[in-house]
Image 1: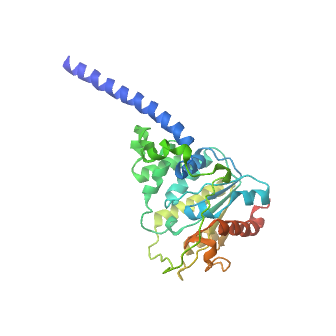
Image 2: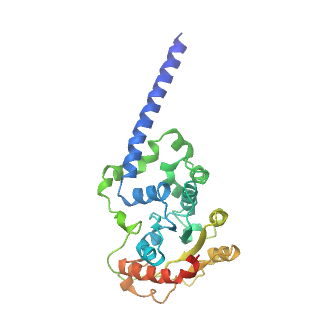
Image 3: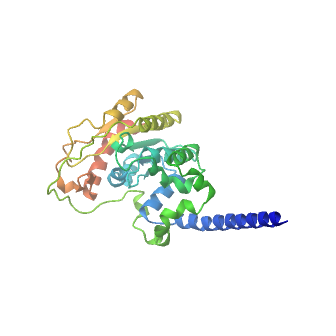
Length: 302
């Protein structure tokens, strides 16, 4: 009899926990979808709402460098910059692609490659897939990346837990710093201070798991008939290493374009176009987008 009562108490508590978690999770989901904070807006819209024909994918350099309105005006098609900051890497990008493809098929994707997408760089492991938490269960690719991060089952168990990292942004979200009219682009003001600057080095080994995911990203796009190109944005000061050999080789193997602006003389060494050594400022991003827009004409044409 005592065991029966104990079991009833346990089941009651578990039921109350489930109801509370789902109800609170629903409220947090609504707050998340209305947030204008950079992470929450960019990640939420990119994963769950995009329907544009041309998408830009990547980390912070992509976020700050590609101005969708320039491409929309030139090509007469809808565009959105899905990129986000915080060293988003291939673990995040592959889950994002899965969520997008579970809803619709864009015509074109420009993937702005960063060394963290294929090298064993610091702070760029499977934990970056954690940003996909609010979309647990949305696609097989997303769930696979969350499983690799070790957080899949906690996110499945608790919908509240999916939003714990976003709580401050959810509270103050409507006053966040993203202008939705810019369609995912986040411009940077100010000019680079060149004092003591040195080229960033990448003395890190190739990460084979990342390379395989990058290849799967390419293959999934090709299987869906999406025209994909890989691209590297300019840097103010560049290492002499052949940093982008891996994505260049993959592009060649899969017969897709690879656009390399890493050492573009129009930008390299021009401090007036950079916010910091790796990110173009607003003026630089506009000039770069106009250049890329012109260079992609053959890629975009029917």
